[in-house]
Amino acid sequence: MKEYGSNIQKLVEHVVSVSDRDTRTKHAHILVELMRQIHPQMREGIDYSKKLWDDLYIMANFDLDVDSPFPAPPKEILGKKPNQIPYNQHHLKHRYYGRNLEILVLKATVAPTFDERKAFVSYLVRLMQSFFLNWNKDTIETESCLQQILELSGFKLKPEVDALRADGLIPDASPKDSGRGPSRQPLQRESKLNFRNNNNRNNNNRNNNNNRFKNNNRRRNNP
Image (cartoon, rainbow, N blue to C red; front, side, top):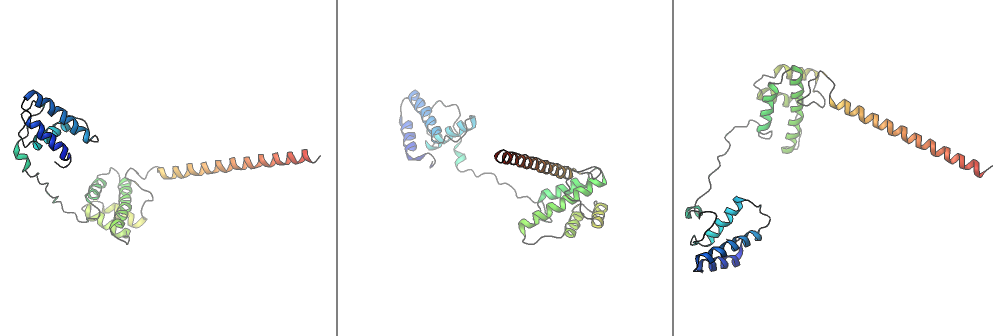
């Protein structure tokens, strides 16, 4: 096995040639520990230990009679092909959005209130536009996104889509927004504004104090 190198292969052949079974077992355990040190980045655990012993048996061509913590693997594993993973047969109407978007559209249809569904659809439009840019150079119109959401929902979101067509999208909407109370974004903007105002006041106070200090120094130097 290439990952262990030719020297390990020679040691394996030497272990197989040892006549005394107890000595052979002792050398096999030492060799497995050496194989472990060759790949220190591998995690410790029973699965990794079993893999090391399996590799030892394979390098010995399954001709190794020792007392090991694991049974020798069957010879058939060398020619056994891995199980094939079937391709996803789910048909995506818009592949550049992915399956997750279809799941989100279904979640939007079961949102408890009309305002929450509107906010959810507004969020989906922004999300679709960002996904679309990953695959295309041009942007996609809001109306196209609304129509695609309408089709993906089986036209269950028609009242919400019609309302958004008439009134426009909800700015900074997220699936948790209900539309009935203040959103997080205005609060964040208000906090930032208050922070800036406080900083401006502090800066003005510092400037005034510095000016007073300079004027006092001038008076002392010029009696």
